[in-house]
Length: 82
Image 1 (cartoon, rainbow, N blue to C red):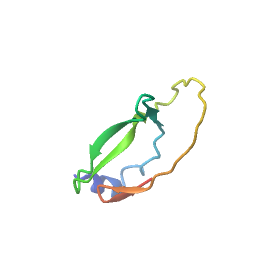
Image 2: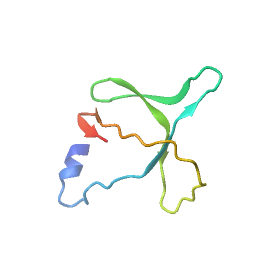
Image 3: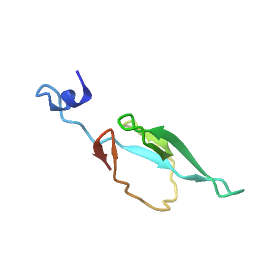
Image 4: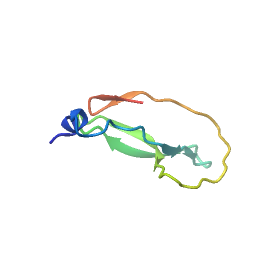
């Protein structure tokens, strides 16, 4: 069964929003950024994203200073992602 078929099954719950935490890390010596390279499996387009990942329920977080928030909307494997 494909991922698309799983999403339309009446026996499965609808997909849920997933909490993630991403970090932009800048190297002071030359201004370079730490990023993760990936490719869209559908069309092979390359992209970079900040390092980070999912946050588990109940995870404890140290207080940080928020520098900013950015929303990025793009297409991955033929589906709009935000």
